[in-house]
Structure formats: C-alpha cells, structure tokens
Length: 186
Image (cartoon, rainbow, N blue to C red; front, top):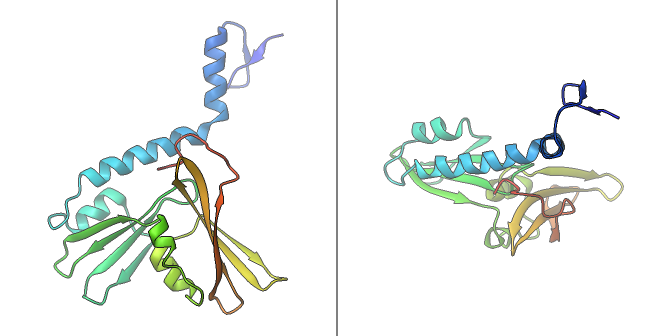
C-alpha cells in the first residue's frame, strides 16, 4: 500500500530512509524551532558586550522586550522570556548611561530561592520573567505559575502558587512531565 507524502499524495518512490526523515520532520516540527532559537540566543549574547553595547543594540538583537522595569539607580531592566517552549528567561540591565550593564539568565535555583512566602505576583514576575503557563484553581482560591528550566540533566518545572490576594503561598520544583525532549530551548 502506498504511503502518503507530506503533501497528501502517494509516496511510491521514496526509500525507507527518506520516509523516516520525513516522518521525523513531521513529528517534531517544534524541536527544530526550539533548537534554532537556542542557537540564535547564543549568537545574540555573543554579539553584546557589557559596558559597550547600548539598549538599541540589545533591542536590535533580541527584539522588543516583554516588559521593561525601572531600576532605582535610573537604569532599566529588559525582560526577554523564552517560555513556554524554552527553558530560559533573560533579564538584561541597561545603566543610566544607556549601556548594557548585565545579562542574566534568571531561571536558576539561586533565583528560585529568592521567591519567598508573601511576595506578590509583580515581584515574582520581576525576578523570573513571564511564566510558561498560569493555572487558576478557583475552588482553592489559588493560582499557580510554572516556569520550565533545565538542571542536573533533567527538564524541570518551578511552580509558584499564589493565594487569593496574589501573594506567594508555596513553591515547588518538579520533573517536567514533558520529559527530556531534545534541546528544550536552552
């Protein structure tokens, strides 16, 4: 029986290796995109230099930030999330002089440790960037935010649960149920 091609027609002439690669390409369309985004971030980061690159340079390489935070010193922090498919979120600080002063990947255990009971949603967003997913639990009067990250050779989730007042009730780290998919946007 002839196999269907990706265009929907019969595939009479393709050999088994060609069909296998076609099936992989159809089954994993997001994997290549995620791996490509991770490679792009590495290139973008390599092109920026602390104390030299300007906010315009950052925006040219990373695009428009998801959020911009005013810092107490007069500088600004630009948020560049890679959620929901990636496993990193970047916060890029620009000093009052308009030059990049820091580039941090914030989905790390030391950052997660800073999320304490009583912290509000805005403060958590400022620390970790936009979450991969939010889940309301109306009966419990809670909302959970999830971030995907990679640590100790495993894909994981950091989960922050907020109470009805929008304050941190608890945090937990779990194995990502999506498993150990290729790349993960690291």
